[in-house]
Image (cartoon, rainbow, N blue to C red; front, side, top):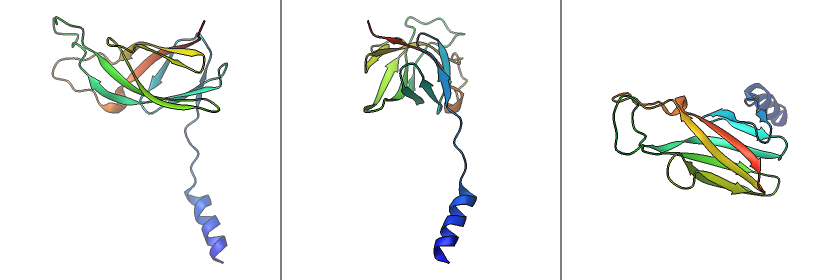
Length: 132
């Protein structure tokens, strides 16, 4: 009886995860904070987990320096995992992982003075290429 109850509770509470978006090598793609993509030609999963720092110059302000946004990424292949950061202005602006290069193209939305960006509103445009 206990076994049946446990199986029933697991079935009732089970929810499928969000579908994983698939992208190709060399294709620019946009990923939302919290989202995962599969680079199908590389068998590489990439998760954009958030933006811990964003000092980019607001678009409605004249700044001396462009500022920087730092993104947290998790990379996973069949046998290796890596949690790391990538930046818009500071190094590293691209990452090497298992024979591939992951490059940050841009971060949206742009900052506006006096208007904070909600963590879930961030999106990053990236491209993954085979390292030459």
